[in-house]
Length: 453
Image (cartoon, rainbow, N blue to C red; front, side, top):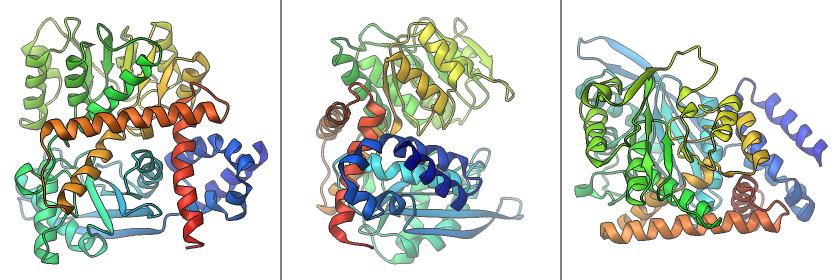
């Protein structure tokens, strides 16, 4: 079957040249599927893997907008509608200069299996633009979002494709996007998730990805008779996911000591407590400032710039028990992984999408530490988006406690499904195989039932 993996990947790379992140995501999944193909020859006959890596639809469009000085700018918009086998396309929109088709295909492909793991009826998709909201005024962001939605609105709907937020797309952007959708479509429906609480949003949605990541890490530790309580935790990023990962770590008795942004990172040996987290929330969500200001407020903490030419990410050089990469793809490489292991790290749970390089994943698996890939550990965000969709459909709003309890239960079930599936397919403790196989099986069976479409 090793030949099958090689031949399959040769076909994927030839058909999708230059899309290295997409190749990486596909390779990780198909490597896990070797025992599945042995056990289910009908999947190979029906070309299920080949159909899974080909999006059902790819949309690419021009997004012109005018800045506050009256100058015209042109960005590129995308929506990759990857798989609707188990429900409407579901996945975030990312606004960042690095966005291109290959990155969105990698994210959309991951989303298929992540959504399947939640057990909620959601297919996989992803979208976004190379627009950078950083440094833009609210009015400029509004103009861009309105222009973006004038094309996207005709392709989405509550039962067709339900986008959400991602990097660069928070509550402000979702609000502007939804307002334009409502005007163009003349409908008020659950077409976007991450909405404001007073117009269809769900409690716990902003917190969900960070909370879910920590819940998953806690479940892994519990499987070894341990817990996050009393553990030093390193967290990368300082956006939505990282912020609420800090909050949940604190609630479970852990000690978060790091955060990072695109220019540097802080280490607070006293721990990032609730007051310090409140400062970060205001700094990042309101002032939209840089983390270096944390040291100005809390001089006992240290701050270090991250050079763009650095071969390693120094945030992973801090001695911790648990690491939660919550920033972006490929932020943790093989050398970083070796440093974490050498410093005694016993658990890694990915809050971001594919933050560990293949070399880093290999180090984690060979060391037999607890390691959870993003499609399992960060599924809490899309799971709560699914809960928001349910609330929109029944015109109800659940309490904070109800949503958090449902999220916690979903993450416990995802952990158990991954753990059990890894064991069933001969690789106990390998959450990568468990997540890939469990997600794939649900989608594959649905595709078999629906015929060649």
